[in-house]
Amino acid sequence: MKKSAGILPYRLKDGRVEVFLGHLGGIFWKNKKRSWGIIKGEVKRGESDEEAAKREFFEETGKRVEKQLIDLGEIKTSNKILHIFGVKQNFDTDIRSNMVTVTYKGKQYSFPEIDKAQWFDIEEAKKIIIPSQKPFLDKILKICF
Image 1 (spheres, rainbow, N blue to C red):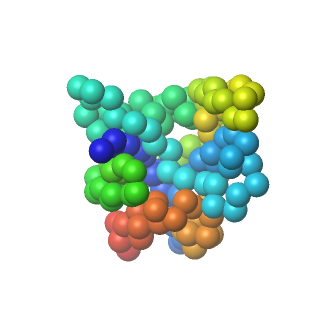
Image 2 (cartoon, rainbow, N blue to C red):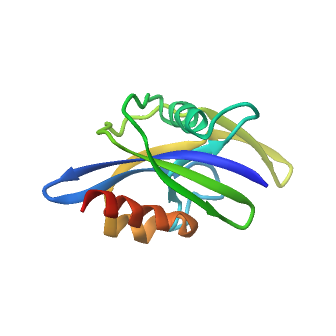
């Protein structure tokens, strides 16, 4: 089974927890409500989950994570294992993502893997995040309180 690793940045603002999520780019996600997620990607052979998470975060945002990561654990989805790390680090929302190319209905499309990033209050994030990633939001809350 494939494995992905990612980073869920969080911050405290006005006594509330906020998380930094990426909006998935491309035609499939354009009009979907739950099109925001933890910035993550596939773990390559010979790479630790933490190394993969940092690499993917940089590739999809142009931002480096320099602080100590907090292991939030793993969950199994229908087609992969997700290993997510938290980090208390404040980022601006100006990102530079890698480009991906897909073929859809015989046409090739190129677009950024993550087309925007934004900070969300935890309760708002629960309404827009890809459902399989929701448990990690609860884990962040436990760390903060």
